Amino acid sequence: MSLYDRWILPRVLDVVMRNREMTRYRAGLVPGARGVVLEVGIGSGLNLPFYGPQVERLYAIDPSEELLRMARKRAQSMPFPVEFFARSGEAIPIDDHCVDTVVTTFTLCTIADPLAALREMRRVLRPTGRLLFAEHGLAPDRSVQRWQHRCNPVWKRIAGGCNLDRKMDGLIGTAGFHIAELTVEYAKGPRALSYIYAGSARPA
Ligand SMILES: C[S@@+](CC[C@H](N)C(=O)[O-])C[C@H]1O[C@@H](n2cnc3c(N)ncnc32)[C@H](O)[C@@H]1O
Image (cartoon, rainbow, N blue to C red):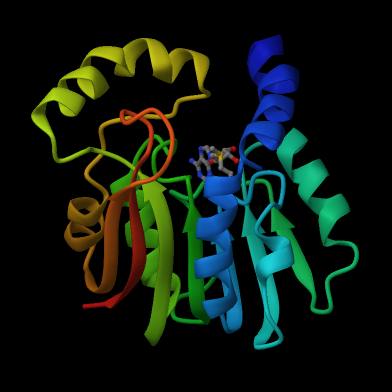
């Protein structure tokens, strides 16, 4: 792993991911988590302040040791136990059907095999559980899509593997979820980066 990926990118992410638009999605989504919760790609822990009193325990996964270090610091004052795993979403170290809520925000764009990770999320969820997601991805407008496809190879290299052009609702459905609620819209910001898919899904 390069110095950029190991030390610089995590610090840049921690600052960039605090922007007001992303915070708005966190605030709308994360308080809906309840019971035993798994957050995939917790990053520096920016969702932590939005978890409510219905959460019993949080499992947090991220492959970046540096981001996990920041998240651990933020988790110190949480009123429920938080267990961290320096692992990838494609191989979640949790038994089948023992999670009530899976949370993923701005992460499916970066996971190398998002379908495998979503299938893992489905495996660990109880049949009555919910996946809560807020992700950026493929825009509906052809002109924006063209830019997303064109810029993707360079963007991916500088943004830690982030892809601009994944169709998130399609991936979630293909992984075996039924989408119960979905909001799709452009948030404020560059259109290639800001088409958001936010909502909830249940194991189909
Ligand atoms: C743009 S950041 C978002 C972080 C956090 N979810 C947030 O909302 O602030 C993308 C995150 O995905 C994580 N990530 C990358 N590959 C992953 C994988 N295979 N499994 C789980 N997380 C991954 C990165 O380490 C990073 O924390």
